[in-house]
Length: 501
Image (cartoon, rainbow, N blue to C red; front, side):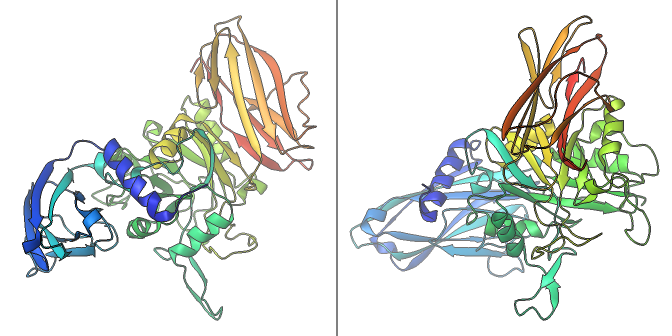
C-alpha cells in the first residue's frame, strides 16, 4: 500500500540526493535564538554557461520547532526584473530553476552568471536553540543534467516490468481543445485534464508532446509530485513543413524551422538534437501532406540519415484500421534497409475529454498503447527500453493484452529489439507469448513477408505460448510477430528480433 503523498515526496528527495552527482557548491551555516524573526542572505556564485540551478536545503532543530523558510534571488536581488526567483516558505527543501521551467513556488528565467542568493527567513527558533543548515547546489551545463537531481528523475516504481503508455498527445500548450466546465464552449484543454484521463485509462506513463513548444514542461514540474503513479515524460512534436517527429526527454528549445537558412534540412535538425541525448520518433509517416493535414506526411526534401532516428510511429490513433495510412509499411522498409528502429504508437489525442473516437479525427488517450519492458518506471528507463526495442503496440489500447517474442540458439537468447547471431545451418528456436487474445491469430513476419510454417498460430487460451524452429542461412534477417482478430483487424504489433544484425 502506498504511503501518504507527503512521505512519498520526502522519500523522493532523499533518494534523489543519494542518486545524484556530487554538488558543485556546499554551503554551511548556523542560526541561533537571536535570529528569530529575521532574514539571512546566503550568497553563492553561479558560473557562466549554467543552464539550471538545483538546490537541496537541509537544517537541524526541527524537533524543537525551528523553522527556516527558503527563497532565491538572482544577481539583481529584488531590484532587477528577474532578480526575485521565488519563495517556498518551508514547503520545499529541494527546488530547481532554469530558463524553461522551475519547481512550483519558483520562476523560470535566464540563468545569469554572477552572485545569487539563498534567502532564509526564520519565523521560529527558541531563545536558547541553535540549528545548523547545509545547502547543496548543482549547476547543469548541458542536457545530461537538464531535468535536475530532484523527484522527477526518480522511479515511480523500481521494479522491472511491462509499462503501458501513450507517446503522443496535445493540450492547451498547442492545439488541443475540449469543452469547458459548463460544456458550452470549446477551450484550450488544460494539462491536468489530459493527465486525469490518462490515469482513468490505466496508463503508467504519457509523453506530453505539444507542437514545437516547451511551455508544458513547467506544468509537469507542478503535476508530477501529485501524480505519483503516472510518469509524465517531457516531449514535443517537432512540427515542420516536411514532416513531424516527436522528441522525448529533452527540454531545451530546438530550432524547428526545417527549410530555413538556419535549419536547411532534417539532417541538420537531427544532428543539432543528437548531443541532447533525447529520443527521436518519426510521426505518422504515411499521411496526406495537403490542406487537410499540412506537413503531416513524412516529406523530407532530401533523404535523411536514419542512424539519427531511434523510432517510428507505426500506429497513430486509429490508422491501423486503414493499412494505407498506417506507418507499419514505412517502418518495415527501414528494417529491410538494415536500420534497427523501434515501432511505437501514439494516440495523437487533441481532446482529452473525448469519450468516443471521431472518424478521421482524434482518438482516445491510450489508443494505441505503447508497452515498454523497462527496468523501472522512470523517464530514463522508459526511453532506454524504447531505444532497445523492448516494445510492442497494443493497437486498441487495452489494459491486459500482451505480446512477447524471444529467440534462442544454443545457449544464447534475444528478446524483441535484440540481435542474435545464428550461423548458416543453425536452428533458431522462436517463442511467442500472448495474453488476453483468445480467439485471435498470430502472424509471423520475416523480412516483411509472412512466414510459411506448419506451426499452429491460432490463439485458443487466455495465456498461450507458441514455439517453432527457424533455419538460419547465416545472413541478416529480422523476425517479428503481430496479432490479428477474427476479421483480420490488426490488434498487436511486435518489434523484431534481429538475426545476424
